[in-house]
Each structure stands twice: as structure tokens, then as C-alpha cells.
Length: 411
Image 1: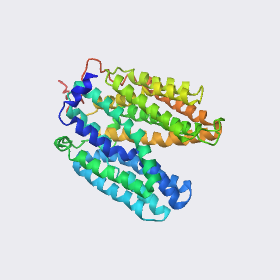
Image 2: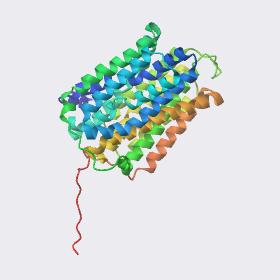
Image 3: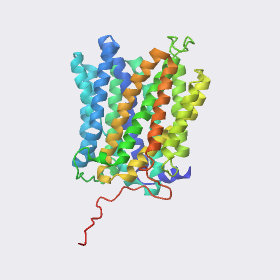
Image 4: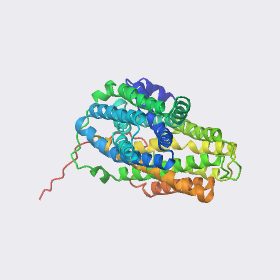
């Protein structure tokens, strides 16, 4: 664990890590707050679903596009402008009652202008620490982001239930604005200059590793969304699981322990040297926990097996970041991480949709089965891609040079 102490001694690392977590904290709050706010405003969940879908579509579009724009205009201008616009749009939805079509349009713009903190910070990390510490930093980041998904929904529900959904949206906007400002003003953000990519938009997909990370990330995150739906259904008071339900507190405990396992796994394993088969192995740990979860929906059983399965979650995310960082030119990493992020957003939507259908057809175990199938797909893709996944044993993680060697024929 001493490697994390060494990371903390690197100038700027702690500030960047904490500030970007605060800037990204609204990502763990917005879905549930928007769901509650729109449902109260229009009286049905269909309207809320339309608004959330519009936001997700906009955010998926913005991922690779914002990464590309940062290469042209710089990190600070793009992060600052998107933070201000997105915050203003959130406040507008909070205080102004508008027709559904208008609200959906604003939600789409919220998605499009979501500050690209994630691609920015993952592009920044290789410039903050020596290459031999980069794997540990990616692991620490992947572990720390679990705080967003554990505390974010808790804060969202607490504020919205105690003070109203308008206050909840304003709190999310405050995190986005203040956390974003702290991150944007970090000296490290101002010191890193991104070179504009020399290739057309989307050309970064010529890297097999970007495609692999995007597709594997899609199925991996889809499994997370599906199992979340399954756990909530297992303890809902609708009897889906045949037990009559126990309430939402139990589902929160189980999901918190799942995220806690990810946090522990990231700290213990995520920094280890990555081999071509490491990604599949880490996904396999999560898959084993998911298969075990199908045995029983008892809270104690689910808590134990999902905690153990969660040990592979953050290490798998760290592996995806390592793959991109070690194979993509620095000028193209922001766009590459944008594509990876887009794949994960599609995975969230796909996992939630398929998990919901499976719950209606097969009860809560159906969603867990969907999650297991998604993980199996991700693992098989990882195994089929080992020829392209870099072997980082004994190597430092650093992007390839911006210029290559030109071969000139002698005759």
C-alpha cells in the first residue's frame, strides 16, 4: 500500500484527484433527482424516462466530441464553458415549469454540455506522475469513483426528500460548478497542453485497443446497471422475488457493499502489472460473484458474494484506462477516453432496459442473469482480444511517440 503514499507525495495529485471527484459527484445524483423532479412535475414516470433518455443521448454524443474539442481549444476553456452552461441549464429545469418537449430538449443540452472531466483527468494523469506510478493512479481513481456511486444517490434522495427536488437539482449544480472550478484552477490543468490531433474525428478508432476498451466497457457497465436493477427489485415490496420484499434499505446495503468490494479490490489489486489476460481475469472475478448471486436473494448471501465479486470491478476499470494510456498517442487520448465513456453510457442504458424486461419476465433473478451474460460477453471479448492488449509486465505505461519512423526504400 506504500505506493499510494508515494502518489500522495507527487505535487498536485491529491488536489486533482479530490477536485475531479467533487466535479463528477453530480453524475451520481442527477439520474435519480431528474427522475423524481420530472415525475412530480408531470405526474408520470414515462415523462421522466423521456427526459432521462434525452440527457443520456446528449451525454453519449458529447463524450468523444468534447475530448476532440479540448485538443483544439484547451482543457480550461472547454471545461469552464461547459460547467457554466450545464449548471445554468440544471437551474432552469429546477425553477421553470416548461412543456415536456422543451424540458427534454434542455435535458439533451445538459447531456451535450456535461463537463468532460473524466477524459480530461485521465489524459492529465500521465503528466502528473512517473510512468511507473501511472497504473496505481488509475487504480486509485477507479476505486475513488465508487464514492460517487455510493454517496451520490444517498445525497440525492436525502436532499430531495427533505428539501424538495428543486433543492436537489441546485445541490447537484453547486457540486458541478464549485468542484469544477477547483479542478479547472488546478495548476496541473493549466500546465498540460494538448496537441490538436492531426487526424479526422473518429480516426482514433483505428486503434484496436480503443475499440476493445469501448466495447468491453459497454458490456461491463451494462452488467452493473442490470444487477443494480435486480437488487432493487429483489427487495422491493412488490413480491417480484417471491419473498414479499423487505424495503429499499436492504437494496442500498447490498449495493453499497458491492461498491465497497470494488473500492477494496482497486486498492489491493488495481496497481499490479497488467498482462494481456489480466482484463479477462478481473472481469471473471465479478462474473463469479454474479453467478453466485443467482443462488439466493437473501440479503446476507447477496452482500457477501457481491462484495467478493466487486473486488474485480475497479481493477477492471483501471485495466481499461491502462490499455488506452499505453497504446494511444497523447494528442488523441482525450478523444479516445471520450469514446470509451460513450460506450459505458450506452451500457448503462442497455443494462437498465434489459434488466427491467428480465425482472418483468423472470423476477429479480432475471436481471442478475442478464448481468452475468453481459459479464460473460465482456470476458470472452477480452480473451479474444489478447493479441492486441499490451503486456505491461516490466514496462512503464506511456503513450507512443507522436511521430513515427518513416521507411525510405533504397531502390
